[in-house]
Length: 99
Image 1 (spheres, rainbow, N blue to C red):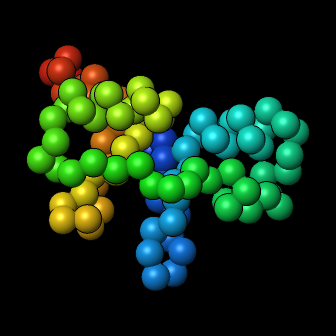
Image 2 (cartoon, rainbow, N blue to C red):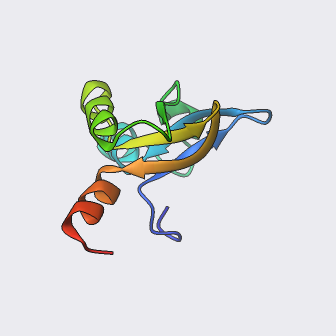
Image 3 (cartoon, helix red, strand yellow):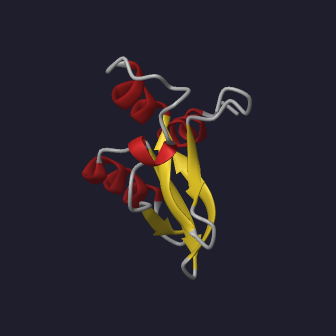
């Protein structure tokens, strides 16, 4: 995450994406509990299932879903296939005109 300057990653289970992990989960589940990040597995603190909406859904729907699911990141799908990810930061940048 630090290398790519992103706040979340999708977790690949081999044949499909099985969850996501965010800076928040890492902070709450690992660092705040004094757990060794070098030995803790992603599965231990990833969020399941993946939260998603279709690319044709509105930004308002994305915000509603983020609020309902208490998350700052939502996968974007087209015909059930993940094509991207939208975050609270993406929405704020878009509406503020900051790129």
